[in-house]
Length: 206
Image (tube, rainbow, N blue to C red; front, side, top):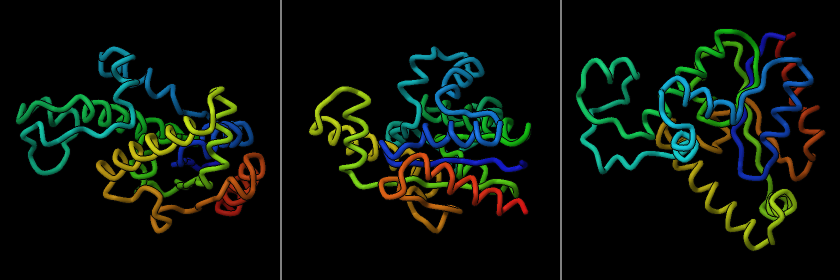
């Protein structure tokens, strides 16, 4: 096994469960919410602040920003502008994701990891989606809320994820052209999705 798997996902489509299933199947590290703690430690920011800004785009209209997003080192060296905290979180997670990928095979969920690693040869990018009824039912059961509230969360979180991903990753969220494999988990189910992706990765490595 020599593949780095990144998972982008619609809210409630099973990204965390499928990612963990793949990591277990291939016996490789799994990174999802632990990236928040890692970013907090690296940046020195409070973990709750990092969590609140995680997968959130900055409001760039509030800042005087040069063309292009610098690395953390460049930003510190130039002092050209006051970086929005959301940019700081993104760039911190960017550097963490790159270093994790250098260490070897792993599964990464969200945080624009598909875009961050787009130039890595042994990288497979996955996008998970499903219809709203399937996703709402899963969220309602997991969070013990009614379907109406689950649908509201789907609308809100998907809007935030798309805005975040498109802001930092050039309008690619959910566009099949930019992924190696897209799956409708509402049709094939969570467990079979793990099997399909596992088979795909295995074929890629032959």
